[in-house]
Image 1 (cartoon, rainbow, N blue to C red):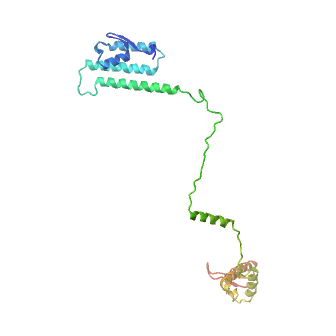
Image 2: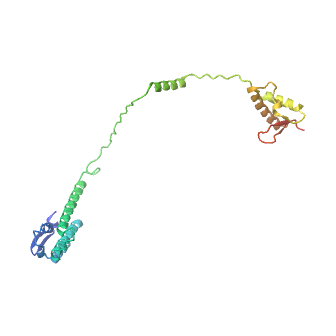
Image 3: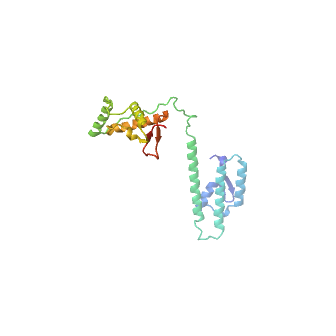
Length: 242
């Protein structure tokens, strides 16, 4: 703190800085009864007016110090109440500790702001190199896992042989020829199962029924047969058109 920023008082019974007066008053080394609070206020206001560019936080600190001096003097002049806690001396000590802590925070902030800044005082590297990542795989497998993996790979690479089974089926052409021939000889409605071959059993019967159904639909589209079904999933009847 420079000399221009120091509030020096010239009072009856004291001449010196305000902060020193507060410290001596806390230790009861100065008789505050001889200190004029009015003169203290006048000199504080004159100091603020003379130093127009003084820092606002410094002026606030001096104002708090002067207020505490006035509080300590009022504690000496007025009757002491023993139930008031804490005492004025203890409050003055707390104030001093808080001011010291505040000063330490200001100094730490000033040191922090005075450090080198990237882009102003120091500059990063133009082509930064990234960190190289080294990966090493640690495999943990049992004999079953190895055999299963070998089986899957072997199944994918093994040549596939597709063998078409020789199944007995009735082609659509054969079903068309058979249904068209038999429906002409039918006198009345006949269920579609009656148009299947007598020897149709098992898989061949299913194929013949499906082919006969498609043949009946095709013949009905051509107008060569009439279809009748009373309800869903009911038997399908066929007859020649009349």
